[in-house]
Length: 228
Picture (cartoon, helix red, strand yellow):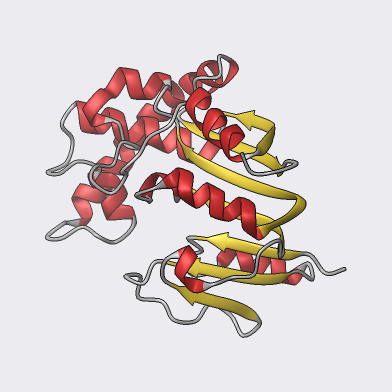
């Protein structure tokens, strides 16, 4: 049977396009404020709130919520909806920032992944596991390693804390071409400094990951016997 994959907060559909190449039937959901209307000829794409879209229950083998749950106003209710959409023994792949991380405690309001007001909720490994288990999921793996998110998050948080750039997360904005009134020299300076900070970020990445206090939580969970 062809695996069915749902990506909630799918963006431009890069992940779903990769799943499609492996023969999966793919569905994507994105917020209606995102200026995207098409992500692939063979991908079923929806815009709007998950419950309003009316996807069939017990339909999907894999559901991905990758750095999206923290943006949602009622994350537990969304997890319940995801539980209903998964087939028995279906897989949920989930990632969120780790509010219990070393970076969060060190940088506090300067922490890159705090990202107020876009991030409405934050989780520690304990609170996220409890939310999943209360809904009925069985957590099969949990890690706080994420090479891209944790290394860059440390560098940007450090730059925020020491006041580099006119605005918080300035380097990130420049890399995403969201900087206004910026000069190539500013980008070059931040790139040089970021490279200098990277060895410290690598040490933090390894140590915090070993201690379960990395800046990102990545979870795999299975649909259990029934909704609690």
